[in-house]
Length: 314
Image (cartoon, rainbow, N blue to C red; front, side, top):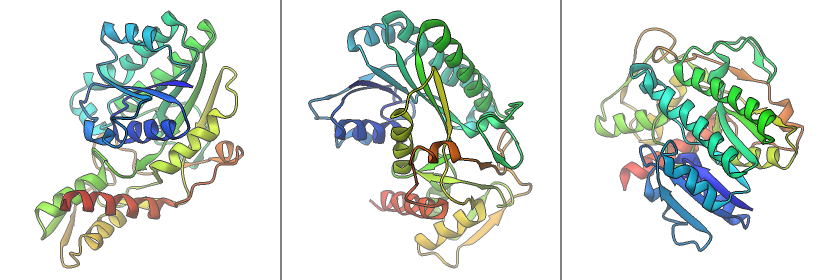
């Protein structure tokens, strides 16, 4: 397969690119390096079947790139993934989450690319109660990021039906692993590495969500795309269990070897406006395809903390 990965130098995109190469595919990664990093691709940069183009997918050159690359499948991961930034700068998710999706779909339509894997999010559900199934509605996101992803999903559905595309939509949970660029694990390790006496936490620490190891996520995507999309298949992805912000802070303190460091919590059960304090997924649909995560939520968090601690110590 000839694959194109937008956001290909990012935390998830770089791991996906390496996985696709291991499977024997050719990979063309596209990234504007606003969040992605070249060093994430060091292990595959010289691979004969790998190419990186530094480019914003909203630029006119992207459509010409799709024309020349002729991808069999596009994996669209490029987006603003920092929800708090999107809240403080409202155009961020319009431009970098929704319009990136529109430009990818338009380039695919124009040049005949027919298969899309779209990275969506739990944020489209808002504060839905109980174990959320893919058919849950109404969908009421409380962040601009969630709203932009939901709008993107709507466009994916319309393009699939109007222009003969096939699409797989994966609604990610909190995904963690090596080379994180933001999020609680990234922030906590950075903060306590700088100030070894106190770790300040946004919110009261009760925020509780399922965390998923990035390699388990890629296994789930592989399981999903191995089955047909007619024309759109949608999957929730999450591992077993959930982890609170308090637990993450305590694990960071433990992994840094700072048992006497003080953890100072803030007020309220969310870290910022638009933060969903807790959610739970029903994942029976993706598990019915034979996917089982290798790590539960706490194990995924600990593995990611260890990778970040090691990175800080280098």
